[in-house]
Structure formats: structure tokens, C-alpha cells
Length: 174
Length: 164
Image 1: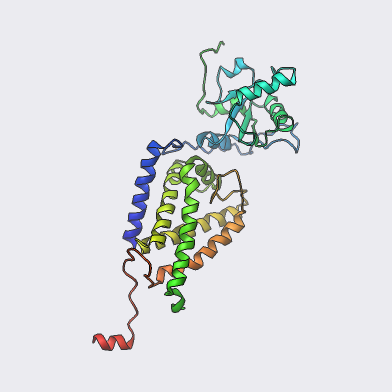
Image 2 (image 1 turned 30 degrees about the horizontal axis):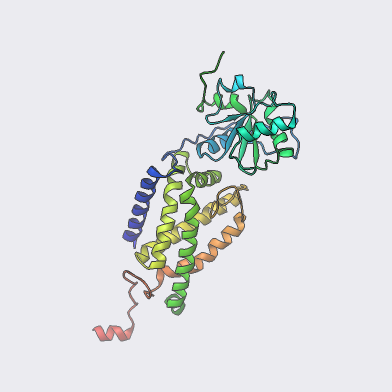
């Protein structure tokens, strides 16, 4: 009985580890999940209102990053975005949004090409001092029909503070 | 009781139900290990460095055990693992309910579509055990490819007399 169970587990392990080598949806064998005890849960700005998308804390943000379960949208201006963002994050600047609706829709369609309206999207900006993430999330939810948004209000600053990987472009001028 | 436990039809029904459920449940997890890792993370019960290994290996155990049950190969080992996994799921769900965690169980679908509450899942797992526990003791070996050795019959006075 035990021997058969061991065979089944061993076979499963070999298959699991082997197929993960070639799978298009492979994940690292050892994930980097760090539990950071901030103690207070997600950072929620005072101007948040009940209809807003949910706010997530650094632990949830890191887990969603590690498991590749969300699209990241940096709402800061491009000059800040190129100087250090969450790796893979896309950029639509809330401050530089085109004035005409038509051009605005076009910008979302091109930056978020291939992203469905109900795909999980996490919006963030610089950190607690910046409200672009909240305004961007409200705009996307209320006017653009995105239905699976989350706001990481700790933003780039909290991400860097806990030394998670950061992507920096050559275009960065400081 | 013994008659039910040894009943070929009861055991075959259990094999089909449990085998089917485990194969079905393994599928999205094998295809989307990242989504399953996320579900495991939400339970806050597994140390971070083991989450991905568990997310990779557990679905394959579910798949092979499901196949083993239906086909009837390494039956006793598969039954042991099914019971082990069900007990593990029940402990995890109970603990999540006790800690008031708002979780999607991560049982069948990608994590974002919570189709059933932790309570429903817990009850479902307990119902599965109505089949899985008797399988530990059954002597039924009908419709199995390689059944392995059945638990030996307790010696009756008659058989003792015959062999003696």
C-alpha cells in the first residue's frame, strides 16, 4: 500500500518537474514569496470611497507578481516610469491623458492591446503621495468598463523599499 | 457493513466519482500552475519556498491517482493518497474558515472565479470520504487492471477448520 503510494508520488514529481521545464506556463521551482509584516494591511488613501476597486498590500502585490497573475499599469508620467517600475508594467500616465475621449480610448486600446476588460489589472503610481493610481482605476472602472481592477497604493516606492526587482529603461534621465 | 464495503458496484461507483473528480480538478492546475500557486498562497499555510513546488506536484498526483482509481492499478496506494489528500483539504478548509479567510478554494477553477464557498467545498470533501474510507478496507477487486492484494479475510471457524 505504502509502496504503491510512493510510486505514484514519485511518478507525479518526475512528470511535474519535467513538464515544467518545457511548459509555456512554467513557474520557478522555488517562488520568492516574502511575507512582509507591515501590520496594517493595504495602504488605503483617505479619499477612497466604497465603490473604488480593492486596494492590495505589498504581500498580495508580490504574490500576484511572482505568480504572474495580473497586468501591471503604472499611472505615473513616462519620465518616472522609465526610471524604475515593476518589471513588465505598462504605462499610461494619468496626468498626460489626452483631452479628447477619442484619443484617450485609442491610447488605452494600444497600450492595453490584447487585454480583456475582465483581465486582472493592478494600477499603481509613485506611492502614498500620489493619487494617479486611484484616479486612473476609477476612470478605467467607471468610464472604460474594466471590471477586474486593483490598486496597489504603496506603489513604486513601497515596492523598492522592500527591494523587489525593478525595471529601469536606458531612457532614464536623472 | 462488510457487505457494502465489499460490494463491487459501490466500490466501482466510488472509483468513478473520485477518479473523475480528481482528474477534472487536476486539469486547470496543470495548465495554470501560477494560478494554483496563487490559490495556495491565499491559505497562508504553506511556507513561501514550498508554494511553487506544491503547485507543480500536487496536480500531477491528483491526475495519476484519479487515473489509477478508474483503471484499477496500484489501487491501494491510490486509495491511501486520495484519503490523505482529502484529509489535507479538509484541514486546510477548516482552518481557512476558522481564520475567517476570504478564500476561493482553488479546487477546480482559476483563482479569480470563486464558484463555491469554503463551506460547500468542505461538505463536498466530506461526502467524497463516504466512498474513499470504505475503499481502504474493501476486498472488491472487480474491474481492475491490477488490483493488488486485497486485505485478507478474517479467519472464520470454517476456513480455519479447512486449512487445519
